Amino acid sequence: MKRFYISTPIYYVNARPHLGHAYTTIVADSLTRFHRVLGEETFFLTGTDEHGDKIAEAAKAAGSSPGQYADEISAAFRELWPKLGIEHSDFIRTTEERHKACVRGILTRVHDAGDIYFGEYGGHYCFGCERFYTEKELKDGLCPDHGTRPEYIKEKNYFFRMSKYQDWLIDHIEQNPDFIRPARYKGEVLSLLQSGALEDLCISRPKTRLSWGIELPFDENYVTYVWFDALINYISALGLGSSNFERFWSSANHLVAKDILKPHAVFWPTMLKAAGIEPYKHLNVHGYWLIKDAKMSKTVGNVVEPLALADKYGLDAFRYFLLREMRFGNDASFSEDAFVTRLNADLANDLGNLFSRVLSMTRKYFAGKVPAEAAHAEEDLEVISLGRSAIRNFQQLFKDLKFSMALESLWDLVRGLNKYVDSTAPWALFKAKDMERLATVMYVLLEHMRKLGVCLWPVMPDASTRMLSQLGIAFDPEAVDLESEAESWGGLRPGLDLAESSRLFPRVEV
Ligand code: MSP
Image 1 (cartoon, protein in one colour):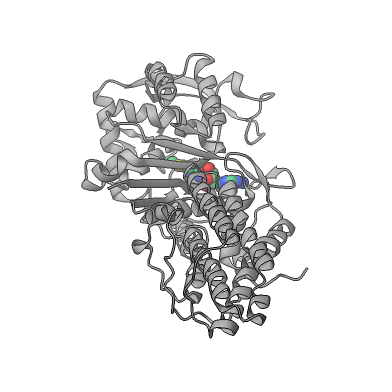
Image 2 (image 1 turned 90 degrees about the vertical axis):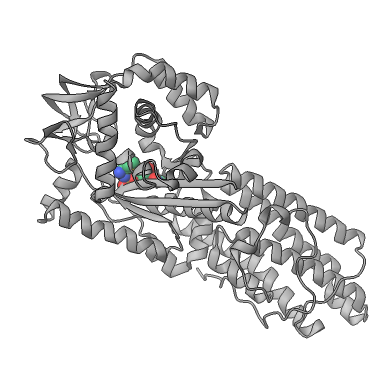
């Protein structure tokens, strides 16, 4: 059986969830659903990243203890996801014992293998990034990400011999062209790796400076650097050496935005290599949601509340918009205007109208029952062939994370069907009492609408379930075979009772 394991980043608990977090998590959910209706066994992991300076500072500012603070914000993430239609298989918190034990296990392995050493280091430390920067990496002496002046810190710490795996990593990336995708990010990582010697990674923090972390198994005076701790969640959640690990690890897909490319593309694979674990399968990297050209972030103070939008315009429309608007890998701009325009054009007009027209015609002409079709005419064959290629392309593009193009392709079919209604003019056939031809036209439409309902389930689970139920079908994802939908014909059973009317996506008046 084919398997599919996908993870989102585990989100920091120093800020409440915003649209950026929602996007990544909705993409992961849609991909999981997509692989489910392809008949694969899936595992979808998300969670929260709770150790480190950033959280300790935020807790202090809120007048709370790190543990209490983490509990509260972690719960906000956990409670939000089901409200956005997200069905994850597991939710990991780095403060859980199962995670801490796994981190200690991996640290011990790497330490025993001789890839961790003790040394002194001085560097420019950015508290926002929780990492040291070299002189070269700073922009005019400031953190390239936060624009703040880092602090020069000199201290004794433990280091992971990351440099030892530089050549291996370059080779692995070159041998596996879609290890990091889309290609531009693979290019970025390769040029970083080829531009000079990789430094070793400082993986500890002295407890005198920071105590909110996982104690090193080989030195009680230190806690683990938060990134070394956090990345291991992708394994601790499966349970290293467990049957879940055996089942899913080889299909691991990580999903992240470009802000955390380096830890995922450089730290993580070399950590795995040193621990004797095979690398993940794919790192999938997307761009930023921007608001008027600035990255949406808590620091900038321009965050969009995902739940407020989903409540205002409908969850399905929200999920559709996010996947349709952003070209995976590139940045995209978010604006409520663009959202409403798309909702009205693609959903209310194109898709919603198709359903309401066809259902009301079927009610009028065939008492609301799916009619049986007769032989296909030329124009039927044309629209069926359009459907075949639209659905085939949709599947291939979606599999390749080209969600926007995949939906565009499906909308070629939606619009093609609306044109088909206009050109076959069912009302004229009815007037001419050509019931056999009319039945065929209506069947061709309804069968395509069923296919659209199935294809759209990963993106719009509620709307898709309603679309199918309006066609008399109780949707069961386990019984569906998405792969066959491009080629098959006649899945919709004549005689089924259709809904009397369809109001899928009400128009938003502006
Ligand atoms: N805790 C680390 C990740 C550790 S994973 C082992 C972290 N957390 S975070 O809360 O800052 O989340 C970063 C992620 O949130 C991004 O990689 C992306 O998935 C999502 N996004 C946050 N802001 C975003 C945008 N403005 N646009 C798109 N995605 C964004 O980094």
